[in-house]
Length: 166
Image 1 (spheres, one colour):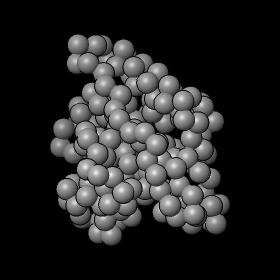
Image 2: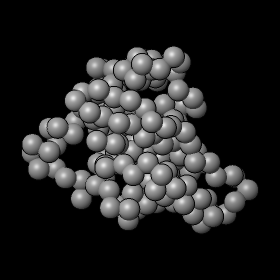
Image 3: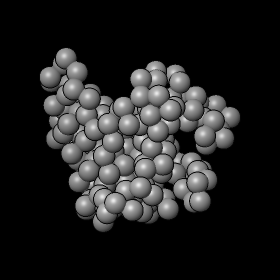
Image 4: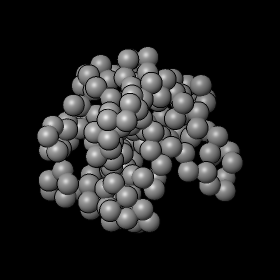
């Protein structure tokens, strides 16, 4: 199975494409879709949509996993990230991918074994689980890999219980 992990963001959206077979994981590609602050909000969303579409067309993932929004104090930021998240979900769904959603707590628990793990612990576990020489950069790409790993560990259970992501 090929999994697309998505860490939503307005300026920088992290993505990761990971192959998962028989409990073995291999990162195929990871990076970010950037949208410049000089662009209008609709232009930024279009850049996210088309950039993610290109990744999906190139790697043909079987499923997508997206991190749910963690609401922080800045409402304006939360709303714009929510828009970017919605566009990412739409891009995956329109390409026929089932979309699964995970909370930050679920991602940390699945990857680091502790739901309150800090960013550095999660990144180090991503590096170790994927056998990478260094922690993936930028942070958004490492987060997307963590989301893909979370889905890989959860997907067997989801399939057994009928959660198909649609």
